[in-house]
View 1 (cartoon, rainbow, N blue to C red):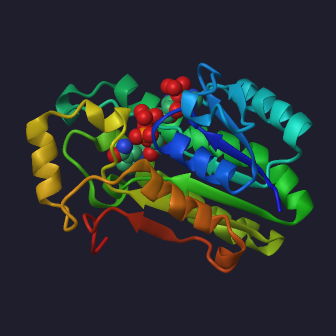
View 2 (cartoon, rainbow, N blue to C red):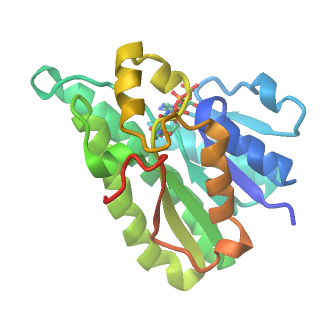
Length: 239
Ligand code: NDP
């Protein structure tokens, strides 16, 4: 069965791999990004690319309107878009903090709220939020990012309770370090330190996050809600 799937930040990195996984399974996939371009890797699929800055509720509303008119109401929402602005606390400006929380946490609020209305009416829906191992373990230099990612857990669990009676599941995937533009900025030295702490001894490929997201949106995962699923090579064990 082909579903209407929306992946925020689906033009590159983890979001791109997620969009690809759903497109390969035959779903109707829409992606959002600030450029609205279709990436090369998705050119062979009939993917709808929509320009949308998730910091802006009016753009979110317009993007959903476009997806709904072409693919129907969103049945699977993956809130993946996110940013980092890493620096130590004493150097972190209020803008560094609030802008990361605005995109990563309030951005998820904007898209989930917009999607939930029609999901509630349909009495079914799947929401997957992309958090991070860092939201559970903390990370020096990432107080803003970790706070935003931890916030997603409380957000998701509240919604799992609120929307569960309407047959809508809300889950969180907490990746470890994944090879994308976001981690490409880390020095070789920092990368070696990180890998040394990962039991599986490597970064994840984006596709390894995508398979878990697709599972959470599948019929097989119908009884999973409010869960935080680590896909981190063992890095965050115990959290
Ligand atoms: P990338 O930096 O490769 O991609 C980020 C994506 O988010 C882009 O598609 C970008 O779109 C989109 N985005 C950022 N800000 C906005 C905005 N204001 N409005 C709309 N879209 C926006 O990151 P990753 O693929 O690595 O990360 C994806 C998610 O996974 C993030 O939430 C990240 O925090 C999380 N994550 C990543 C890990 C990693 O190791 N890479 C580990 C754990 C979690 P645009 O092209 O328009 O900028």
